[in-house]
Image 1 (cartoon, rainbow, N blue to C red):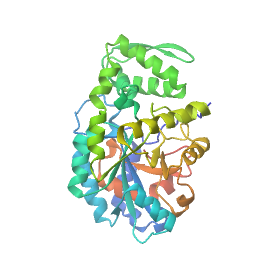
Image 2: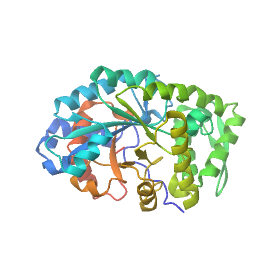
Image 3: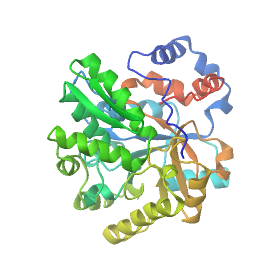
Amino acid sequence: MAAPVQRSFIASPGSWAKTGLLALHASGAHRFAPKSLAGVGAILMLHRVREADGAGFAPNAALEVTPEFLDATIRHVGDLGYDFVSLDEAVRRLKERDFIRPFVVFTLDDGYRDNLTDAAPVFRRHNIPFTVYLSTGLPDGTAEFWWVALELIIAGASKLHVRFADGAETIACATTEQKNAAWFAIYWRLRAGSEDAMRTEIARLADEQGIDLAALTRELALSWDEVRELAADPLASIEAHTAGHFALAKLDGACAREQIAQGLARHEAELGRRPRHFSYPYGDPGSAGEREFAMAREFGFASATTTCKGLIQPRHADRLAALPRLSLNGHYQDVRIVEVLLSGLPFAMARPFAGASID
């Protein structure tokens, strides 16, 4: 059984952590932090890039940044003296201990269509390489954006009768406040259970609410033709993220390996190349651990990234299958926060708090 999913201590747009990060910037303390805290670079993690829709209930907003914020981040990070590099170049620098200048790598998880329509133009404008970690079940139509579906389910309901592993419960979700509370009540309890049970229950709720999961995937995911269009861009690299986007640590060994192998096979069949790099779905400690890191090495990936929060240190040359990333969180679209996080100071300050992370 995988460890329970842990929530980030940055929980909402108005949380004390955001205030604290901005206070650190205002104080200038991050500029005096030991250089060792900043490490040698960072792998930045994104999911969606699109204009904000202004919805009051938007629990997945953490996974979305605007093109304008992405553009501003690139400009600001460049001004801080970072090189923008590919994953291949980042791995080379780690292996050869080429740490003369700090680097940043941009990665986007899952395979949203807006990676092509909204994100890629920003990267092209700045001539910056970027990686899309693709779950092949999304263009295949065999996987779903269940987290988006859950948002739509709650958004459209006044109450829901949800079947959890420890019993059913009726949850009110008529008001925006109730919807936000319902999201945390439902999302985290379903995530704590098995992957199959979670998806089965979300599919049942979606059917009750008249939400077509397959149509939602077709709307949001890159098609294979669009993946090929993106792959033709010399700045873009399409890499592996399994077939079905399951938390590998919750699967038995054979099933976890099959998820990786299926994804690789579909990449090779559709794109004519085998991915060199890998990202663990969800990637938190409850979704990927030492067993999964060993699998990534067995499959011969040059690197594998988690969603564990942190910066790249020289020691990661020996941990290329378990690289941390720094999330560009949609609730914190402020380049001052990016600057503070890149200093490494918030991570050093958070270490005394067990289970704490910056997402």
